[in-house]
Structure formats: C-alpha cells, structure tokens
Length: 492
Image (cartoon, rainbow, N blue to C red; front, side, top):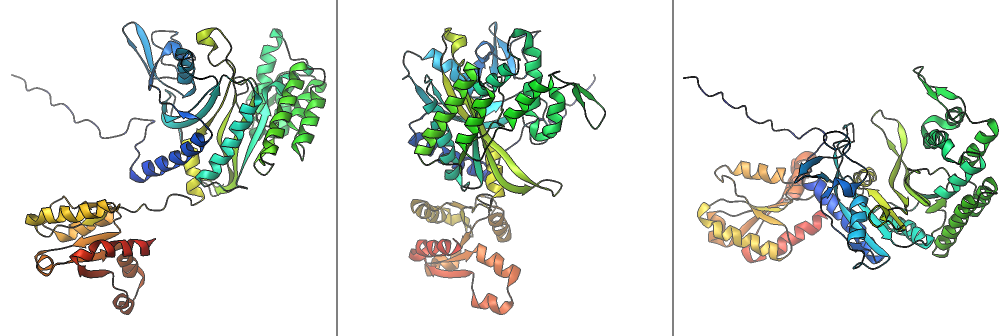
C-alpha cells in the first residue's frame, strides 16, 4: 500500500502586500489616533465604527463585470449577493447616512478610524491593507463646514506634534476650475475627452513642470524614453487660460481670489467658486488661521473629478532625505474636499457633504522623521525568578507595581539560567530588573538593577566610574516601590 503523501508545512510568511505591526508600531499609532480623536471630539464630531464588510452594491464604485467583482476590492459571493472588504471609510459613511437618515441629526458629523483593504498590485510603500482616519460633515451645504474642516486639520497636525511652520494647508475649489474650463471653451459633453486630458495634465504639474503640462495641453508630449502622450489639442489662447489658473497664486489670499475672478469672468459657476474661496478665507482669518497655516492655492487639484466644491490638502514643508540621500520635502499627509453626491445613490436626493482623510502611515512616518516618536519604547519592569517555590511572592511584587501604575511582569520562562532572564529583560527593553532569591527573602530585601544605567556604564564608562555610579541597589522589601519610582524618574 502506498504511503500517504506528507503534506508540506505551511510557509510562515506574510501575504504579499500585507504587513505585521509589532508593539512600538501599534502603540505609536494608537497614541497618535487618540490625539486626533481628542481634537475631532472637541470639534463636536462623533465616533463611528462601521462593518469592515459591505455589499458590493453599497460600495458602488466596484461592480461585477465578469464572474466576480475583484477589480480593486477583495470580494466574494454569499447567498447570491456579493460582499467585499471596505476600500475606504467614505463608502460605508454613505450607506450609514442613508440607512439611518431618520435617526441621525442633520448635519451628521462623524469621524472614523480603521483599516481598509484594496485589491491592487502592491509596491514599495504601497500595501493592500492600511489605516485611514476620516472626519466628515454630511448634510450641510455651507462653506463654513469646509472652513471648519481646514481649521480642525490645522489643530490636529499641531496636536500630534507637527509644529507651525512645518506644514501648510492649501485650499482650492473645483467650481473655479470648472469656470476656467468653461472660459477656455471646454464645457459641454462633446469636450469630455479634452477635459479629461486637461485635468490629468494639471495633476502632473509637480512631476512634469510648466513646460510638460503646456505640451500636454497642446499637441502632446514625448518623454525621455521616447514615448509620446497625446495632448488635449488646445489652441494657444485656451492653453493660456488653463496655465493662468495654475499660476494664479499671489502673495495674499485676497489677491489670489481676485486673480481667479479675472480668469473666470463670465462663468457663473467659476464666480461662485471664487466667492466660496473668499468666504472660507474670511472665516479662517476671523479665527486667526492665517497664511502661516492655511492658504488659497490653485495648484491643489486632488482628484478633482470626484469633488464638487472646495478641496484641501495638508502638506508638510520640512525636508527629509530620500533613499538615495537626496533632500526633498516630505509632502502631503491629508486631503479632502466637498462631494455633494455622497448619499444620492441610495436616496435619489442630493445630500451635501465635506470631509478630510489623514494618511495614518504617512503622518506616523513624518512624526518619526521629526523625532517626535520612534525612540525605543520602555518595556515593563521584569521581576526575575530565583526560586520557583516563591512564585506567589514574585506575583505579589508585580501586583504592587501594577497597582501603582507601573508596567511590570514576572519572568515566566524557564528560570534555571539566570543569564537568560536578564537577556529576556534586555529584549523587552526593560528599564529595571528586580532580583530576589533565598538570601534576599531571609533578609527582607530585594536587589533592584537599573538596566538602562547599567547598559550605558558598560558601554561608555571606565571601571572607576562604574564604582562611583552603581546600577544595582539593595533595598528593604517595603521600600521596593519607592526605589523603583525613583529610578524610573531618573531615567526620564
């Protein structure tokens, strides 16, 4: 009889495009999100946690066009219905706003934080699961809601540790761009293809520069590899209007808006957009959010096909060094805008909405680059085990420390080799080890070892300095807590 084929062991590896988060990463993210939530809560926004799974129909953007709707989302069929992991936090909000519209206040102000999943090709820094942090106001058409989002975003960045001067929030308006396109003769259904090329060209300003964008507005552009990209075919006068829009920023918000008004003269929607920007600037100025924090900037064109009014983007302006050692600005960490078709798919009625999304991983990376986080996190005080029969005594020590608010644990591995216990404490980045064997219990004392000081002395100090600065202390058992606190305070 043939032997059953032995099943291979499963590979212990993270699926492609996903990553694991360990202690410090999780702790730092939780602390940052807590600070963000505190600002949002202070502004009157309520927390919302939605299901990680939505129907594909509710998601809306991704629909089955062949056998399964796997383009962009992780989806599966169940009971003749297609379900998918959420790909952002806005689509679930649309469903919630429609489903509970009779119960929720209007406007409804909510913030949400959590993982989202996208079935896309992973790449460097691009994962299939990542965190988002959103805040939205649903049901208000007032641009005061947009101004409030910008103010809240400014307060949020400063609350997590991005100093004023290290960031700027740029504000623009989709209506102004629509007005520019109208003045340039690009309105109407028959001009949809040209408008698409123009929008994509504007979005490439940072990468291609003025000349590259100008080429795409005209006949087209050939890149360094020789590949040719067809342009929008605009005449020079039309291209001048579009280029003027991108170059409309002036020294003050008022001057920028005045220039935009010139560009959209004769376009009702464009003039409405300029007025909205004027109102936003006035509302923010009245609250002392000046140009050192928030500016009007026509170069902001984030996903303009999606937005219907004001758009905003938070950019960090300090320099970092890239992987090739070159200096560059850190760039964008948050963005959003007004999108007034949020709930319409469900109810058939237009529901105005505006919101912002913070890139959690990007903001964490920025805080690490600024030295705000990333230092080795202190581990727990480790109570070593010298006598297995004294485990109750060791657990009592730990309980005393924990009751005092000090993170602590008993070593629960094999206590036979004491050296391994100290190696464990080092791996845990423990600040202190407490040592007590039979002799200590008989004398009513404990040994308290300052592991941080001990490591520094061993690394840097001479033998004489070691003698002058002991890193291990013998104290009466009833003074253990006080000495531990004293050492921790000294470590900062």
